[in-house]
Amino acid sequence: MPGRHFRFFPERETVIHRCILSLGLALPVSAFAAGWQVDLTSSRHADALPLHQLDIDDVAGQFQPRSGRNIAYMHDELRISTQRGANTWSLLARQDATLVSTADALDIARTLEAVGTPTASQQWNVHAKYQSYTGGGAAWSRTFEIARGWQAMFGLQALVLGQYREFQLDGPAAYDAALNQWAFDLRYRRIDSRLEFPFQQDFAARGFALLTDGALRWRGDDWSAAVSWRNAGWMRWRGLPQQEAVLSTNTQAIDADGFVIYKPLIEGRYTQETVNRTVPGIANARVGWRLSPDTEFAVSADYVDGFGVLPRVAARQRVGEAHVGAAYDTHERRLGVALDWAGWRLGFGIDRLGDEAHSREFRVGYVWGDL
Image (tube, rainbow, N blue to C red; front, top):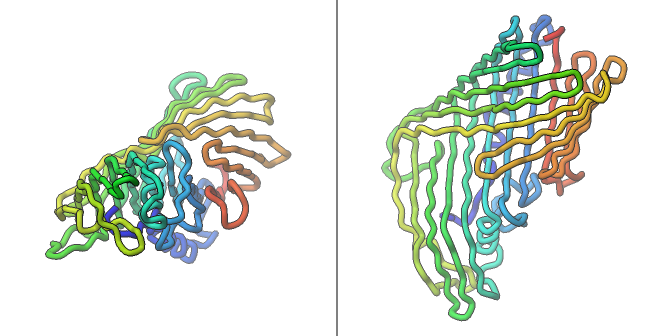
């Protein structure tokens, strides 16, 4: 909790937006022949507050967490691909961010930012972990026909990273109303390519990541099943700035407005070390049922490290030369629709209309010829 302000996703206007603009200006339609595909996808969600409030200065004061674990994420990607036989080659730009926290972690942040001293005694079990990166590079994947009805896929992404951020906050906190006393035992760690501190040394301007994708799929006459993972691997950045802090004390000190004075009680240190990190990625399981040659239903679930399962139910229907689809993400409470027609691949999903939306996704893609 060092500092009174905290932004979920400050990378929102970053490398991927510049890449989208530059690629859109530089690549006319005539540049693509049959077998090429362009995809722009975005998926964003926040349990504790509407999306439009993610980057405001006093964001912590707006938190309204769900009970139990809360999640917020942002997955944006621009990809240009071509398929040659069983191999697919791609250029891509992407930004990825995930925050997993207990409801208590968000509630104490809201209390310290907006409430000040509670009116009753309270305890918090604080845990929050955030990881984000932006970058661009190249990708390769290959499908393998194993046996009749069985198929496997494996892919690699090599990325040059422009930004990396990570923080983790853990420990108990409490307020005793009878004694008017706060107690903290919190541990904070931050790794940030934009962190600045006195006597900071030069560090590598870019990091590197190697990510993997994979799948095993089976399809029968009416049923299908698949297990897969995406964007799991490793990253490395030399000399990245890091901060560690400890807040472990009892105090009765509050300011004139009733807010706890916690900044002077933080002890910590700055370092610069080569950071090697695992990117956990997302695992997925899916089961599909084909009601007819033109109609299919599916149930699937993503598994997010540290949080758990994000289920989805979906249906897909062929209508003439087009395919239309609908999906519902149960945790996000997000309803989506999709259309594949004449080379276009379009999709949009949202949990509610207007500024109160907590979850939104879209896809715009086009295929030149058959992939």
